[in-house]
Image (cartoon, rainbow, N blue to C red; front, side, top):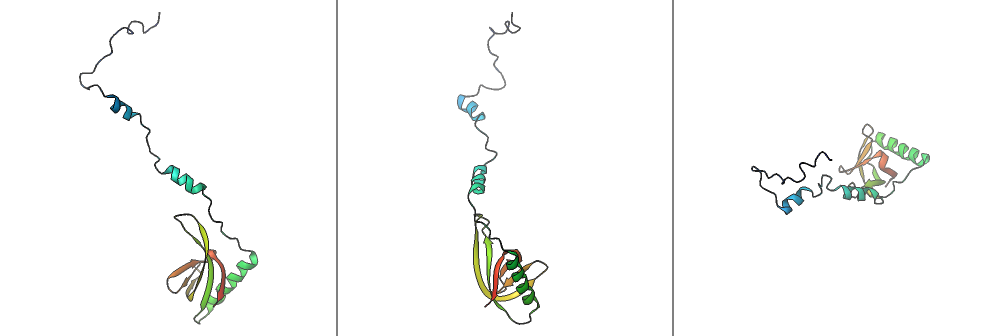
Length: 132
């Protein structure tokens, strides 16, 4: 004899306080919870092939450092042409860009240069730099 045999034949209890829920309302309780909305889009973004950041040789890095040193001590107005890496944070793509202009500032503390008072380029992003 099973321990629940005595209640198997009893009618199902009905609550006097809570009315019976309809089938659609009951089904809604078991719908998947979307706590991670947008996760699939983020995963696809991470998997999508991104541009590859170019690597510089030791000689190229030394040459850029030498030019930056010269320009930071120069009192003359310098027109320069800079090729640098630009990353698009929305798409995650990496591209190179050429910018020509007047060198407004070389900030060795923050490791950046400013062209035409508007364009900020970090030392680590510079691929080449020449006086124009």
